[in-house]
Image (cartoon, rainbow, N blue to C red; front, side):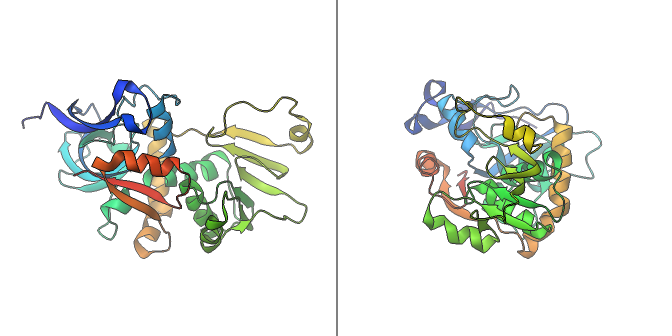
Amino acid sequence: MGFIAAMRAIDVKDGKGPVSSLFISSDIPRPAPKAGEVLIKIECFGLNRMDLGQRSGNYLVPPQAGRILGVEFSGTMEVHDVEGEEDVFVIGDEVFGPTYGGAYAEFVSVSTKMLIHKPKEISWEVAAGIPETWIAAIQAMYFVASFAPGKSILWHAGASSVSIVGIQLSKAHGASAIYTTVGSSSKVESCKDLGATLLEVTGGKGVDMIVDFIGIALDGKIVIMGLLSGSKVPDGLDLQVFVKKRIAIEGSRLRSRGTDYQMKLRDKLVQMALPKFVNGTFQIPVEKVFNWKDIQEAHALMEGNMTKGKIICMVE
């Protein structure tokens, strides 16, 4: 079949800059699938905080990502030429999934190891808001911190997309207590509705697992998923508490992981969460859906730190 030489995609003037530097370019090379990849025509993509960092030049982008922003999408399979995968994915399939980059576009090339069939019960908008946050939360809980029923857990920034996921997973899989922190009173009730308790007291025990850092229990584990508050610790940090409490600290970065690792996370998501998306047990709150022509407004909304769900853009 013939290939279009160029496509529309959201680009950043001069490679980095403020919200005003975002624009839709019509001369971005259309991706050509490599071995093991397929071409997806994108319907919607989700926004994530790493997009803000990449846009401003303050994010370490993995080499396979490219310059176009965007790490999650929903869309239709356009080109399929992967040997041995014909019985799994076919042209015309409705799919969603994560990608290393390039989702702010009409087309993206993605490994089949990262694709998920979209159930008809889930809209394009909701599907585009699932991959990054749900897979990141699953990675932090199960692949890094080895969460088990009966453990208590704290999710910082409880109204953030990843913590919204984490609270639901923790509740569904037997956490003894689920704590969260929030940055404003308007976010309190939404976290409580999901099953969280604001961090006030833990009976003097502390928390078994923290996604970030405060009030850790003996033999607890801290999972650091991002560096939104900076990468430097204050002068005079006393490491004695880590030794005394036998605390384990581990960083978790999803975007730099290989496709085989990503496939294991995808399979875990499909097994433990996909049926619950369909029957409504698990919620994917969407704060607002934008036309991608309004990408500057969408980024500005995310930068305001007042959202309680995913921001999604439709590709027109």
